[in-house]
Image (cartoon, rainbow, N blue to C red; front, side, top):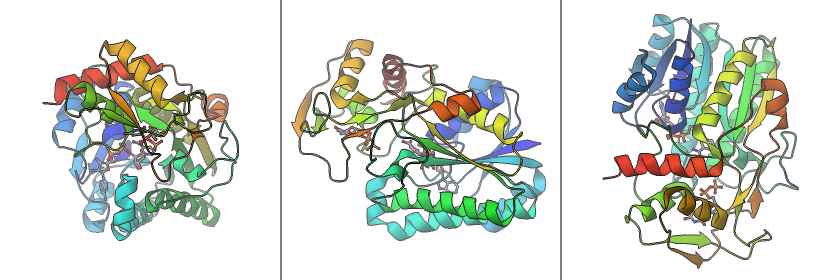
Length: 334
Ligand code: NAD
Ligand code: UDP
């Protein structure tokens, strides 16, 4: 009996794989390595001290994906695999819809064929669009502003419809807020290609003198200091949320459940910068710039459903997230 982890060599998948292995779960990882490296497999094995099977397979490649189901007794799937860059999704909508949606359809079709009807899916707070109020609860209205977000919303709908057609399916949708940080070993973390779009890798590049300064996108938002507020969550806390989701799905009896995974606490861009400086003793040069199109003022979770039903809470604070991010970057960014 194994858990199939799609996208398991990626940022969140690799951290989750380690926690699953350390807990004693058997896992199989499938990844096409379009946004991760094969070396990650050795790192996961080294850190966890456990072995697992890896298949370099694209979810769109039904024939080879089927081999994974034939050769292993897959009982649950944690589905991380997908393309995730918002800007790129606007330039390449066909690639994003094909990869994320078709990839998921091939996966769930094989799950049905091999009678594995338990799936945990990586969704995002982006599906809440511009929230009507804060903090955000799972039953808030949903909307999206870019193809990436729309793939998340469509997959949520697809999984819900599959459950409606066959109530043996158990579906857990996890809506992540802003994952940052890295494993405390400093061995694995976030490694974006090119100039980072997201704030934490960007701050790290400035700290490493790879970029001159951070552009703070807007200081005239309706927030305490005018800069954007987000719910940053340590990637290891997020990974642990998946272990709780697996515990829960094993007890479910034909259900769809949705959980916000966030800390419930919002921090502004300037607060994030201050925490990074304090945690690492490095000054971060920044300049106030124009607002970034499509950004919202503030976004943070009400994580109480995950606390009450999964028994999960995030425990790592912002300083720890900043310390762990920098430890990884310092070690790995040459
Ligand atoms: P990531 O890019 O590091 O990991 C995704 C992995 O999926 C990569 O290793 C990539 O090679 C693989 N992949 C992509 N398409 C594939 C395909 N067709 N077949 C096989 N493998 C494929 O991203 P991440 O940050 O670890 O995100 C994991 C999931 O969480 C994604 O679905 C993402 O949309 C979602 N998510 C991420 C964030 C975030 O800020 N990182 C926030 C909300 C939701
Ligand atoms: N941000 C910023 N400068 C950057 C990148 C991001 O000021 O170079 C801000 C952005 O406007 C938002 C917050 O940082 O308020 C988080 O942005 P990120 O892209 O990391 O995540 P998002 O919440 O957009 O998914």
